[in-house]
Length: 278
Image (cartoon, rainbow, N blue to C red; front, side):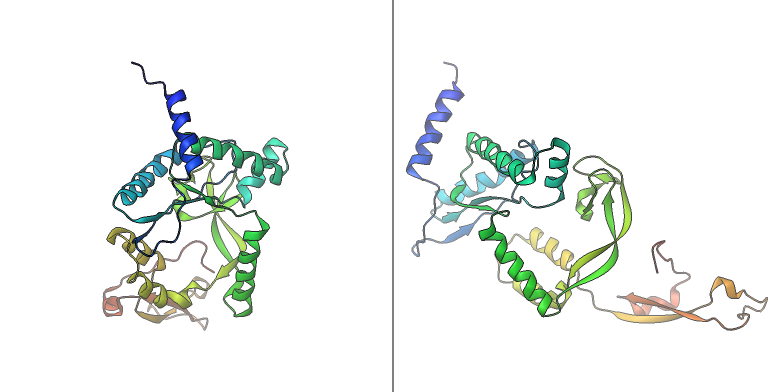
């Protein structure tokens, strides 16, 4: 007999929703397990293949942990703020709030049709004032305590999306999302001094049940390094060099370098400055 997926899956998905089988409640008798996906950006009309690909893997983990008797929290939400949404609005002529609401409805329909075991009672929308009032409050605390500041830095700039990209979003020199050319661009940015909390973040990793590979990624991302700051005397090119190798006139300047291996400096033959170096 042919598998009538439209009829069968719709029937059982409706029953799961009615009986709220994936809603989690506090239960001190069970071990807790928190399973979290990267929330989708509802800046397009619907899901792309990358969404179900990664969500299916985590859904399998969530279901397995439930079968093992754990109290599983597997929430869903929408990372709905940002320039991608504005670009979508410019492209379609639809106001961002209207487009976001419409897209979320379609994303929700698609995710539910795929049968993922999300706890929809915990749904979060980052454009909801009840949510983002707290992110605004947190930013104000950072600012008051000198942890948020402005600086002009070089960022990865997508020439098509007109947005800044993380290093992970640049693949072979192009934007992972749209394929547009990525260039380095100096822009004034809000910065957060996470380096002040590097040690605390590293210590916190010892207390969470992450896989070793994930912990290693986090350690590398935090990027704490121990070393020394060394100042080299540099002769500017405009000063010129005599045949003896001594500088013509004054104009000596210094170049400050951080190194994790100061013991190897005596073997250094040259240094290279990035084109955007001040």
